[in-house]
Amino acid sequence: MLFNSYIFVFVFFPICLVGYYGLLKSGKPEAAKVFLTVMSLWFYGYFNLSYLLIMVCSIAGNYLFHRLLSREPRKAVMILAVALNLGVLFYFKYFDFFLDTVNVAFGTDFVLRGILLPLGISFFTFQQISFIVDTYRGEVADCSLSEYALFVSFFPQLIAGPIVNHNEMLPQFRAFGKKKADWEQIAGGFALFVLGLAKKVLLADIFGAGVDYGYENLALLARGDAALVILFYALQLYFDFSGYCDMAVGIGGMLGIEIPVNFNSPYKAVNIVDFWKRWHITLNRFFTKYVYIPLGGNRKGQGRMYLNFLVVFFLSGFWHGAGFHFLVWGMLHGVLYVVTRFWQRHVPQNKHRVMTALSQIATFLYVSVA
Image (tube, rainbow, N blue to C red; front, side, top):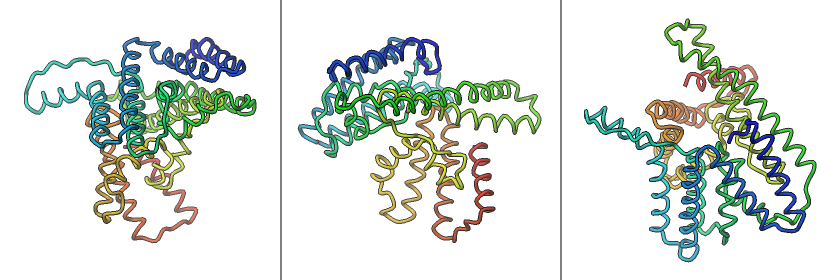
């Protein structure tokens, strides 16, 4: 189900709002949690019931690992849980890519499986990995199955993020029924939802039509046309992704739940380091906490730090999609990120307005071409 679909706007979400606030008003916060979870599962399984089976099995399996790690935080159990999550993600998202790569490299003829990619699996897999690792580290208090199921399946952030943490969501779920409806928050959430919907429908989809035409007629494009397609694609990506995240935050606001902001005007960034502080903020946060810091961060010298940056961007590219072009994209950002960090450490920074504006333009052009 899509946020911009008629069934969501006129059927699903009105039912969700009425049922949720009705249960809270009648003094049944636990029932409200279960209701939101059921609605979230309906939202996820709307297009394909097999998606729902994958989601339910994933929730059940990871909750079992959470219980085991809560009782005895054994590293081997944590590693097994993370490996199983990554294995499921690999099978659904990368297995056909792996077979195709092997066929090309070694001349084999393995038949591709045509595996259906479950919606949002990259997001809820990373979310559950963070939960498992934090449980092992002792950062997660005891969590009920109803709270965990809602944490993973909560529909506003399920399909396109942001990637939320347990310490952002569980305290809010536990506060159900303890506070009255905040009409100012509800109105702000509605306004943000409308803004995100406008980004998606009036901007992203319009730019997307131009992008689709350009990619379908590459041989006919002149230089100016190609430049426009590049520009339109950069704008389509931003308005589509940012629009969905705005709608997610807005829906959360209408339910009285705060969801973290995922974008902060990234095309105003003055360099690539600044860009990644503004674009997909929660993904950058995940890789920093669970990849960059465990690899040593900046604690083992500059050379190791720069290598860690490259590893993060390599994984980020691979996370975004199964294809060598995603890896190239990740490394284009990674190499410039390393060069920029080196430059910032060794060259005095010029913060003149003209230089800032030129840096913003150069960063936007680089990101767009990449």
